[in-house]
Image 1: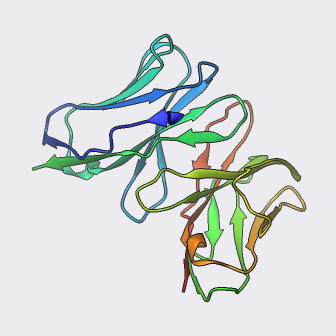
Image 2: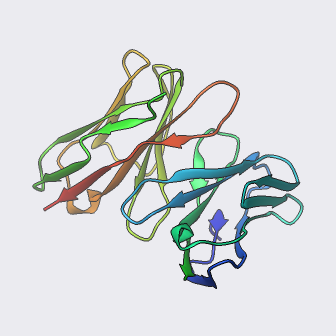
Length: 110
Length: 113
């Protein structure tokens, strides 16, 4: 079992819809959770971080964390074509290094 | 705050040659990380510095790889006797203060012919 798992996609949504991206992790001791966006050929860009159970909202983005079920999700409201990218889930298990999933490719069609 | 910078952005080398990459973290950040990313995969941790001390090194990192951060500011990653399997994007990130949020530089894309 991989430490951090994501569906590779692609996840296709129409412009204006809500995109829902999911991630599960295996280490129950994980402390902090991150979502990065990565455009093709570019480096990861931080979108959201979350430490506590529940929801955290920032503009069109909402991160959700459920430690009991060991999953993290990212909701993108009013999706735009410019949101088309690969979304990487990353988990800090308490040793400073981030463990990444393989990423979910999101395609937003006009 | 100019962000994390990396140099060079692209490097093409022949198998067996040595290469060195540089990373300049965000100025107030005392923690610096190196990751490697291949196509279709997420970044993979290589090593981590707190100030000038190298505190963790991935078991996946062969002896051909070495990293330094001599004055606790910029860092270098050297790969000796490069192999085609070393072709990847090499990413540097930094964090500081009480947060473990890591910010990535633009990366160095290495191609080994």
